[in-house]
Structures are given as C-alpha cells and as structure tokens.
Length: 468
Image (cartoon, rainbow, N blue to C red; front, top):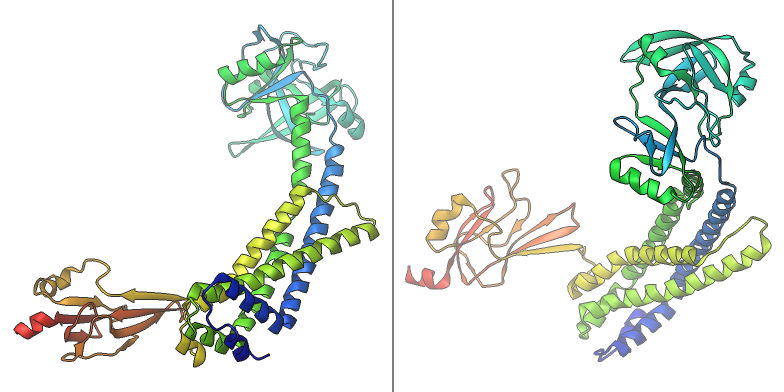
C-alpha cells in the first residue's frame, strides 16, 4: 500500500478515532523501521534492567558487610571552631579531648592528636592514655606493624604556615585504637612548647550515661549547632551509604544507553517523516489539523515504546534465569528504567513531531526545508529612540535584524510599493538555518522607506497615504 493510498483512505479525518486508524495503517506500512525501533528498545531495556539489577545486588551485598564498629568512647563530638563542650553535663562525662592534624613520619603521612584538658586518664569504655611530656602513644596495630619498642625515638615533622617543624618524641606505649580512628597521641602542652599549634577543630570523647543518649544529642545540637555527633550507628550508616553510592547505578553507563536510544529512535522517526512527506501533505490538504498530524508520530512512538519495553522486560527475566551473576531487580529499579525509556522516547520524537505540526503543504509537497522555529514580527519588539520621529509622524515601522550593517535576509518590497495587512515584506533565517523570521506588514499602506543597511522598513498607513 502506497503512502498516497493510505492518505486517501483517511478522507474526512475529523475525529481521533480516524486519526488512530491512520496511525495503524502507517505502522503497518512502515513495519520494518518500527520493528528496528522495537528491537533497539528491547535491547536497551534489557541491558538497563540487568545492569541496574547487578549493581543493586552488589551494593546490597557490600552494604551488608558494614557492621557496627566500636569507637574509642560512647560518643565523639567534632567541633569545627572553638573549644569542646563542657567537660561534665547531666548526661555525660568527658573521657578525652584533642585537636587533630597531619604529620610526616618515617612511615609516611599520619594523623596525630594533641590530647589536652582531661584529668581522668582511663574509662571503662575508652582506654585512652594521656601522654606526659614528650611521650608518644601509638595504636597497637601500627606498633606491631612498624616494629616499635617502648623508649624508641620517633621523629615528627609538621608543615604549618609554610614552615616545617621537626620534633623528636619517645614511644611510651601503645593503646587499643579502632579501625575508624587511630591517631598518634601526644601531649598538647608539650607540643605547644615545641612551637607547633594544630589549627583544627576540637574533638571531645564522651561517656554517656545509660538512657541519656538522645538527651545528650539534643543538648549538643542546642549548645553547638555546628558540631558533628559521631556514634557507632552513625559510622555504620555512613559506611553503608558510601558503599551504596559506590555501587549505585553508574550514570555514565546509563547515560550512554539513554543516548543510544535517543539517537536510534530519533533517526528512525526522522527517516519515517522524510519518507512520508507526500502522505502528510495529502493529509493536511484533506483538512487534518497540525496537532493531529503530529499525533501520528506520537502514537507510533507510544506503540513502539510499549511493545519494545515489554519485550525487553521479558528478555531480562529470561536472561536472569540463565546467568550466574547476582541480580536484584526491584520495583524502584524497574520504575527508574521505565521513566528513562519514556523520557528518551519523548526526546527522540520531539523533532519529527514539531516538523509534522509546523510544516505546510507546499513545504511537504515540494520537499522544501522546514525550519524548527518560526517567528513572526508585525511591530517593533522594543523601543528604538532613533525611530521616535517616524513613529510620531504616524509611520508603522519594522526593525530587521542587521547586526553587521547589512540585512542578510530577503526584502520583498521596496520604497514606493503598496502592501496589504498581513503580507510578508521580508524574510530572514537564524540559528544556523533552523529557524526563520517573517516580517509582516502591520497595515495596508505604502512603503516609504526600506533601508537594508539599518534594517528598517517604514510603512505609511493607507488612510494617511490617501490624505497626502
């Protein structure tokens, strides 16, 4: 069946039911390209579902390994600026407090904590020594790894304000640090005497009274709103979030699949549009409205989207039964895939839909270029002080686009010629030929000035011309 015959069978198109019939006939006529679009959609949907299920499964597996860890105390409070909280509150007791910074050692860059202002050295929940004089306390893991002994000298090098400070300490022992926080410990007063002042926030380690955890958190937020409260649950939650984000759906991969779908479906729809120009011109000449012509492409895209998506989901479920890779296909994952496919199809069909709506019968029949954007100017778009005299004299003016002192379009009328209201007097293109500007006469009258260098067309209304 030819395109023209398809159009002739659509005589009297005045309802959406008949538009749907034409869309079905077109789908049958272009079944080969529609089948290509369907297969492309199915392949992309299948790949998206499997990929999304894989990364979700890996993320869930890794997140499950993030166990609740021990801290050096019940609660740690980081204060970016200023001192720590009050040493004792009705809800807690301060175990230790320090300022932390970076230091260069013979074993690489490490974190060092200057302990200060705590009289109680040990606590049931935190075995943290308070260094005395030049004593240095090292985490047990590092003590064994570096093969250090009590009494061994230890060289520290600080880089503060562009100056290197070199300090020699003595290893006093080791302490049971955690994997989350294991700095080297020194005495802050002794460090200050060496000329080193760590310019960082304070961290306070607190032992919270049983049952007062929430009250202590509320107290901290009220006294120091900028403080960060670190608990074992907080650390575990952060670890799970980091793992989940790391194994979340990779945006670059998903973006590439979406781009492939947009380019593929967009190309297929454009080829369909170009091959059916004669049919569309006949349909428009028979009275089909622009929105109805454009809806033909929307209906075709909708049918291809639904069938291709269903085929892709079935293929993904079948593949799931034959692959050994862990897959976690969830409702949220399917929803995101369906949303991505719908957005991709809407983007791909936008251009052919727009062209089908705005194209004229002559442009379709004669295979003329169809601009995506159309602008019609019937009056001045803004105020021009240089034209105040002409406007005061009753002239109607059109300002043409002449950025380089020359109008690049076509003027259809010259000075002394008569024009009718609504008649095109000039035409120009913009956006590299994707759009066109049409300058229309605002009234019946005579063209008294047509200056293409200044980009000006002035028209004297007909009644004023008759009076003159």
